[in-house]
Length: 508
Image (cartoon, rainbow, N blue to C red):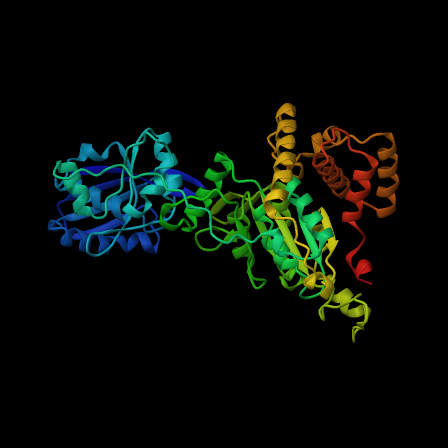
């Protein structure tokens, strides 16, 4: 007899339907899985055998063949355990096969028949909803799956026995409720930062327009402290952004207890991170830090300490908003629309250009240290600011800084203006930094004085075409913060001041 069960395989954030075909027939006693399974899928036969035995079922002394169709699509992961087990149970008549026809099934089996949580339940639930089917998943993943559709049929059993009893009618499994993670306690606040008023201004501008930011300053000047407070002034995720972020986190197995959060991601990888860790890849083409930070912030501390090739691999995601992982037999695309914030010292000793300090290696220390960052990478950074050392007067002074809640209000107003503008233009972008080149000059048309000033400054600073457009985007954000429709000369001047000169010249 042949039974059929539907499950999924993951390609990027998409869940592709997979038909699990189970045949139990005469022949030499064996349990075979075909259809390009990886090691985890091939080992599922032992987990299935033990789980069925623990549940009071024994495999018949026949040949069991499991085919995962389409047969030319690689199958990876442990979530095939449950569909294979249910397919075997249907094939031997332990449960009616028609009960499984309207479900997409995934889950990992323990040897005692209980179900363990798996990654990718939210994309699987979205795929099942598109196929107009329900979903069967482990109990811990039920809250995650419930976000796909409020009316969708979802079963989240703790074990095989619970699921079998549900189909027999002796036990009823209730639909799991969607879970939302509460606001974390003790979110870093800008009120904690004393001094650094110009850096706070740059942080507000970066948050308002989604611009990339580079902070250069000596050790202990507060660069990391400022970066960690950027999420506190960013607006919450929209429902669509929340779904995109959660699908990526689900694939990476980073949704704790199946709870979603409306806080924007903040990822801060160590500078020893490899290219696969940052961009994505590896044996199963997993999403990297740049994708896990989608619709959020990617913070790169000690920027020159990163491998130069790893940094340059970010150039394409920063420009296109996608991380494309191509292998000989695998090609996956993950969304990577991020806001990058970087911090670095001006030189290896950390104090170049600081009054009263003289570097032992002089200009050579600055040049060699900053040469690790390529020009094309720097060209993609809109704001480059110096963060000077904090004085004792700043630390001792009683004056309180503006809290994040007040700054967040101004950022939200600027974001609303941008969303309305892009809606009127029929553009899919949400922030000025995401605006395509075709609409940049239209949305940031300066007045005559500003245009003449910009032309002269572009020639003096030798701006590239990308740099020219980024200056216009930044000036548009400054005008939005001021609530003005027209980009004035003062906005262009401030935008150009943040663009700055070559890093090594500034440090010198």
